[in-house]
Length: 109
Image 1 (cartoon, rainbow, N blue to C red):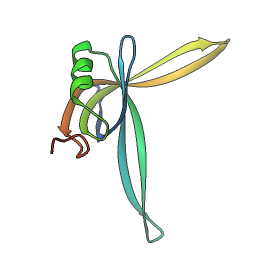
Image 2 (image 1 turned 90 degrees about the vertical axis):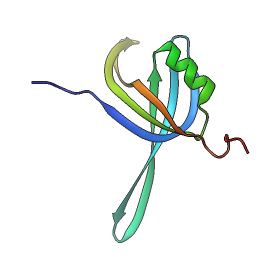
Image 3 (image 1 turned 180 degrees about the horizontal axis):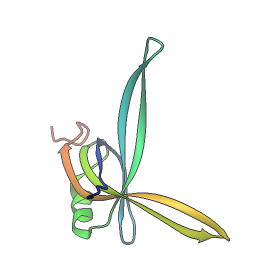
Image 4 (image 1 turned 30 degrees about the vertical axis):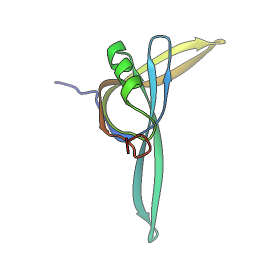
């Protein structure tokens, strides 16, 4: 049986944090629903890790806060020992990162 590990996001960039061997891009996605006759909404923030150096450089040069991006990623789970306790982490690792549109704040007039 074939399995799939894919996470797809379409959202707006919050901030971009360069690290030594990676780039962290926070992406906001919105969701809406009806509850008790009221329209509700919430924003979920997903921290996407970009490991590919060329992709990270392109993002730093071309993507800014508020831009709409499409991301395909894989989920990676890991654990490590911190002060004698096991710590678990789930990472969203970008495999495809596309700029859909620039935010109006960053678009040329």
